[in-house]
Length: 260
Ligand SMILES: [Zn+2]
Ligand SMILES: [Zn+2]
Image (cartoon, rainbow, N blue to C red; front, side, top):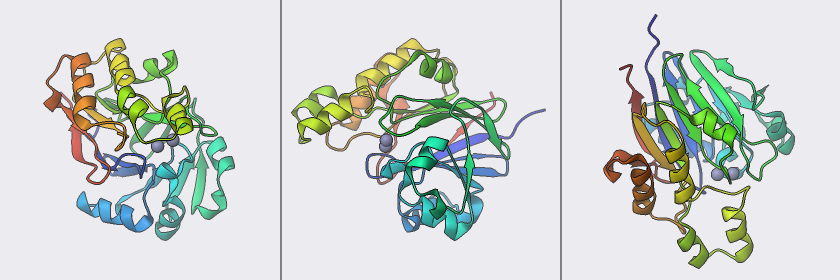
């Protein structure tokens, strides 16, 4: 039996807000909701979607750039919100339309979409990232992670597409405008991946099935798209043009995982 095509798009990515849509068959999920409810609606419209097209929201962790609009958006459109027990404990979950708990160690499904969460080192209460599948193809989402662990490598190994954090260039971060404590947080083991860490991860896993690589959560102060692209392209031995960049404002339009 052939499964429905998996496709995804980013509404925006970076420290001012993150949200991604994934679609398979008749199911569409919003992964993170880090813009105001009105802004989420506006950005869904760019993808020819309305809130009524979304079936559920999955939250990776409680930081505001992933959480901001979730209460208002979920209540306005009566959408269940999936989150870890730790994320629920860190926030006022009463403000959400309805909550569903997931464990960062247990796969679950929403409609036609399979989700394989995994825990990541990051300075939130119980942060998780996700591999998303349709029984055939797998999209790995990896963001807001300070260091790559063997478990993380295993989860994103041999995916068909990757959305991967490439947050900062270490030299730009060191010489940039952030105060010392924030520089230490971003570069630390519970912070964000540098271009070099992202590239190293790609060198360490099986990337032969990759149809798309998207660099995400780029810092506007401490990185440049061409640096992130060049680092990942070198690791993949591909042209920098082949590495997509998810922008803070524009996001990234639909990418499909063909069943070839
Ligand atoms: Zn973030
Ligand atoms: Zn975060």
